[in-house]
Image 1 (tube, one colour):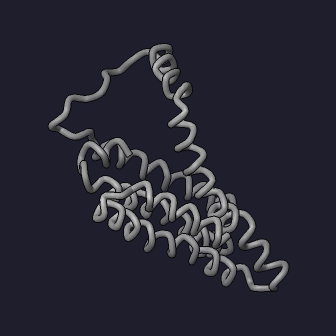
Image 2: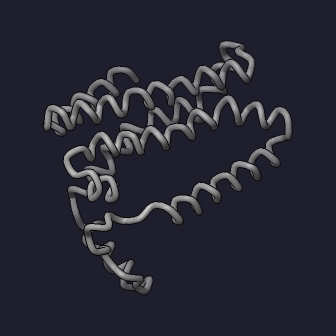
Image 3: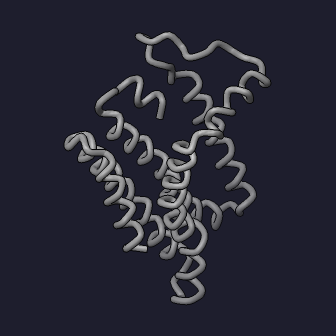
Length: 176
């Protein structure tokens, strides 16, 4: 989020929503392709492949993503004690806690339904086969992939982030 803000300024909400969208691709790939791989190779080999892919993505991020070159880096390498002490103001900030709860409560229903409950409910209660249940629950992530950038664009366009955040929270509450 810091990178989006420092690189893109006024369009940061849209860029952050695109970052969320990229993250939600995991929700899509965690469903159907993961189910197919697990059926073909077993869940142990599939998790190993998933871990290797995650390490590759981490390496690519480390290798190619950098802070805004026009700005000087926030800090140099620092000892762990200094880093932990620098977290104290964040933990003491009421604003940080509000943002954390807001984000967590908006994402919690999405994650619980799509990742934990969705497949079980669809396969055990409604008797869908596992592949169809995976496809259905991945639609939640695909809907968010389409909606997040659109929502971020509208927030940037109208320059009224708070009203969009409140409206999103109310719509999330009503839909779940």
